[in-house]
Length: 253
Length: 215
Image 1 (spheres, each protein chain N blue to C red):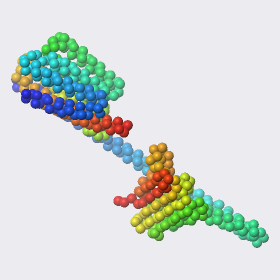
Image 2: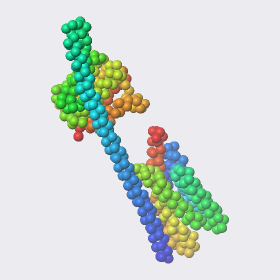
Image 3: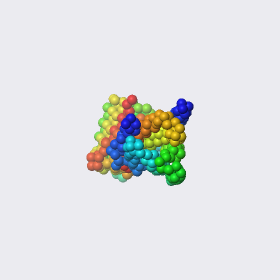
């Protein structure tokens, strides 16, 4: 009698142990699979980062080449043309003088454009210097009023961060010129608290949610990715009819 | 009375939870709720018949068949893939034929323990398979209603197997032991239905969120 009782109880316990074993095996397999998924996701993030870095390097290389071409080739040709005009000035001053002035402005514009594309110039003059150069160039275009304000302190940024920030700044300004219909752009750069840059315009603005939902604004998404890659905080405040503000600052911690 | 104390609380808990979240539960979990309602009804009616010394094995024979059909169908529904679901439905159909034969041969007043043993094996294997196919690649395994349902079914039917496999033999030859071993069923009953209650809560939350977000 006791044998039957013991056998049934033991068999039941054995089955219970088997069930526990199956559940534990499934748990372990599940944990392993989850960890594998996490490492695959991490690898994808790393790959994307690497890809963006290479993209950025290639872009900077291309811009550097264009900048050198502008300076060494087109700039030289324009300078030679200017010198020839100066020689002709004495004979026909009333014709040559206005042309010479325009040519002088063109040389100046080409030089500034060359600088803004050249990150070596950015290294020599810092972020404040190159934004100053960009502001002068934009003011000469005379398409909108630029309000430029800085505290004369060079932001504490790494080389790559400086290049990235400047390219983002150019993208923001370019967007404002092309799409915003703004009359004023307010630029503020502070180096006192590490780094803080705001670019604000009084244009048409846009609906950030709508842009994200419709999949438009690849430039904006690109900026967000670039900022994240460089450990920069990128904030975008915009509403239809209320202009837009872009804030770039150094990530704390 | 002592028996009902073990058998009823878990079922009542599962039924209350099931009816609270009834609207949010998908079909599979509603069928499980129906199974719990049938279980409590069979339990109470069977006890009532036993109280007046009337044969009650037929009640449990019918209930065991309904348990197999409902729990097996739910396994098929949750497995999802037509091929796997078909296997589950075929197994349930085969077991139904087996039930008919056993009841025809031994009569309705004889507990169909061979059928019950077979259905224990079928259901335990189906739910182990369900656990493996559905939850192996899921991130938060404890937040899946299938996990709690599978554990309740595997635990109950897996551990019932040795006792109910020998039930008729024990009743005929070792009645005292059969009575003593009934405690296994009581404990398993006590565990099975609260787990189903937990499964209802998680399922309701999960499917309500899916309906709201459309994901």
